[in-house]
Length: 226
Image (cartoon, rainbow, N blue to C red; front, top):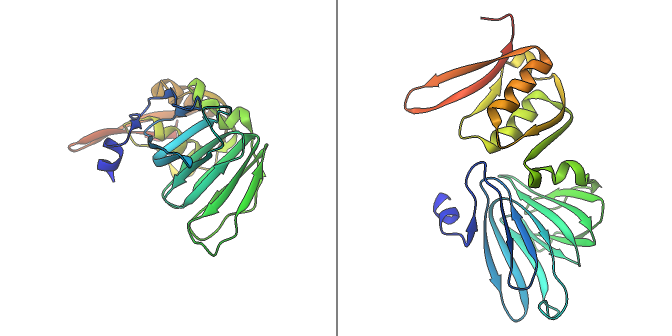
């Protein structure tokens, strides 16, 4: 709910990023339209991911004091085991990617078995269970921390959905070109420039769609279609 995001301890707007050092020395980077609550106590260090995506590097030593570091989402929780990892909460599932150390995932359903992810692995989970682990790519998975979206033979419609996270204006494409593949690195801080670059690479044109009482939408279409 929007009010939960507005009331969160740390948050970012659309297209913003924010890096923060927590009281224990851990670092957290929030991606676009993200929000977290920080709940550190004597027994554990807990982050509640209200919305969006975070990259976390956990701290050790005296400040950690042996307390578990847990990231909670609506689908369950991920406990860090000395690590650097990202957590992204979407509507139907949470994605965790591990770059150093390991993370234990526990879905919200108590009957679901926990899953251990090691460095170089990623998976998605919902309240009922966890998917099979697959490879994580630190280059593509953390490019957003540097203001980039890296695409590796990504479908155009999937690319626009991802780029749309950084824009106040909806992004889409003509169904006739949705399956075209795009590769490259594109700036999340300048969505218009990214769209122009993609349009040029795929010989498409950018359409501006006016919508009554709402922000304009941007659409990629075949260059020869009026």
